[in-house]
Figure 1 (tube, rainbow, N blue to C red):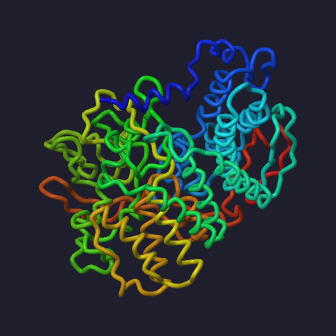
Figure 2: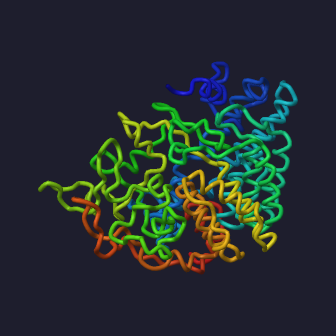
Figure 3: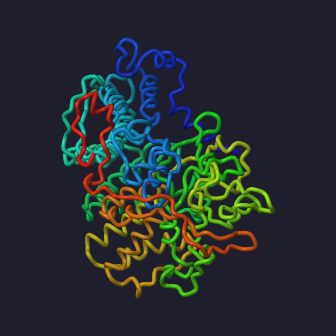
Length: 528
């Protein structure tokens, strides 16, 4: 059964009020006259709903990892293939279509709300709360813009789109604005609305603040902000695999998620990732680089453990590997075996074999968010919520920021990492093996990568650690060639997916989309 109480809150949030539906259909919120709008609480709620509309989409977070060494997006129209292999231009799909983060329509909407909300006749505390939510949404939007483009126009009033100019404010000024806005929002945001109903709460704003401070190298402020969230009662879900399914979406680990409802606000991820012979497209393919990052079950890396079997590399591994990635020979729905390496099975063509139409290009597909335990009648009509912020990120932020701020090892850092590892079924950190700052940094970075895989954070980590030339250069590899029939035996060479080249000249920035360059005369970023 679906979570009815959760959806009561969602329906209210969406502003489905008959008194304002007609108004919303007629014209944008920022062009409505004072005589027809910005009068009642229903108007404010409808406007808030409009601000939440598409503020974040699961495909933004999910797909971004496939522009990194975590994965490969096999269809160019997905928009991230060129970003991953270094061929991105100002006219690429990522730049010109659905992943154009240089658009300012949402910023205009947020500015309109913040300009007009004080006109509404409603309780002052409710005005403050709604204002805080929209401040967060605007700050979040600018977070993406400044990360991807560097200097961007900082617009704080509801300009018409044709009033935009080519003036770009410095990234330092924009980042300061974001942090200042978050501080204002934190004061008035509620601690909670109940179990994960999709509205921004205080912890969400603190999480974004802590993340930005980490990215900016303000380590002491970052871990101190993380500590505030650690005192708010969040906890890790007991089952890592279940957390990313419908059964786990009311978990106390989730700080903020996007809400999905079958037939109305659909999550299409299973359709993109299910194997071909189950009706999926296998669009998003994990890379061998990520698979190799998962430790053995005993806590040793695959290069440290003599028992690691290169021909059957998926046994005795960190349980998060099988919870995140479907490997050759894995059991998926029921007793179905995923076979992506044998060209034929019982004399019949294997439609899941590598390089078959709509099959994987790496030998792998994604398990996280797939809910394989659920027999879905329609894999294109899934309703699992998608997590934007969760408590595990806070623990990892705390561990990294505390280590970098103090340049010393302490028990609180170990404790944070241990909580994440033991929840996954891994052993405690070997404090002898990881007793130095350098070794512990290595472990924290590995834990971030495997714990948060396919949650949209790897690209930012590559950028802030400046490891692009190391991890985004050379051949992107899939699994080894071999067989699954009769038992997994992969004894050939790795499949080569594509060559990659990191463009140092871009300085980790994306190109300004060409239509924006033409429309407002914006100067293009370096390297494009």
